[in-house]
Amino acid sequence: MLLLVVLSLVNVKAIYGWSDKSFSALLQVVHDMLLEENMLPKSYYQEKKVLCLMGMEYQKIHACLNDCILYRHEFEEMSKCPRCEVSQSKVKDDEECSSDENSKKGPPAKVL
Image (cartoon, rainbow, N blue to C red; front, side, top):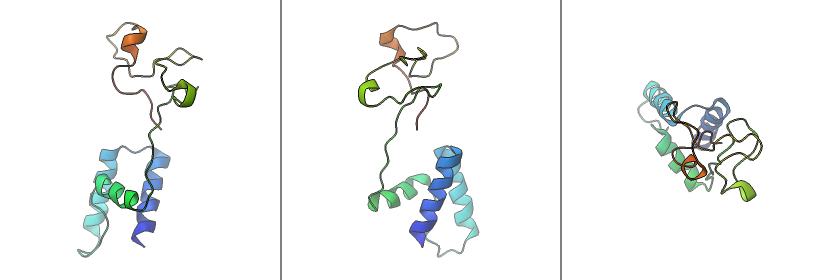
């Protein structure tokens, strides 16, 4: 039963794109509403540990901000989208167009 609840909650998180922090907050609220003996994880980290024990790991894949490509296979080492030329990484507002060597710095613009 616990696995079914955990899978259902993670599925809703994925569908609506909730952040890990907001999902942990939701888990904490739901955990506090249930009886003290409940086994529902209190955080996303604990929930991931349950899923990993079941062999259900996941892989984060970087994607083009405009949904042109996924940065995997032949595109894995690229720093810009070959279709729309958008950087794979987030670009700060005060930065000018950066060169290829700087464009892969920082967090990815979009992750699936």
